[in-house]
Length: 153
Image: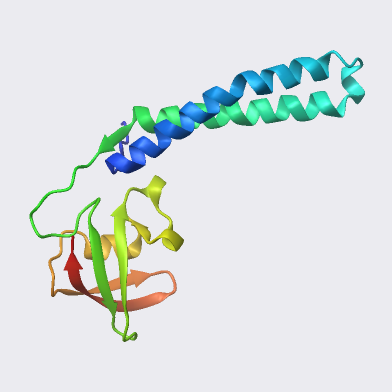
């Protein structure tokens, strides 16, 4: 069974940009490896070992990102008034007088510090397909809590 990775168009573009950047950097890393190899005895050549490791990491990251794009399912925003991937939601947590605003994104794009929550996180799952005014219970590893959806953009 093929598992498709849901993501926003912005998340898809971010991965494409990283791939482009890594591909531009690859010739430089190959040159460093070649120069290190020319220094002599490979068994005691730390420059060669480090250059080989760095190039391997780059190649591995490229394969990983290309696989993410291959299995990406890009979700476009809809205007149905419900929380969904790509939309921005303002939430009121039951125990906090302030509101918090998050963009609902794919797993690969999630970054709570940047205000991006994954649609399949406990909070994301609880608010998906809900409307403004609804209060939902979030079941998280650290316990349960309630949030009310104040706005959806």
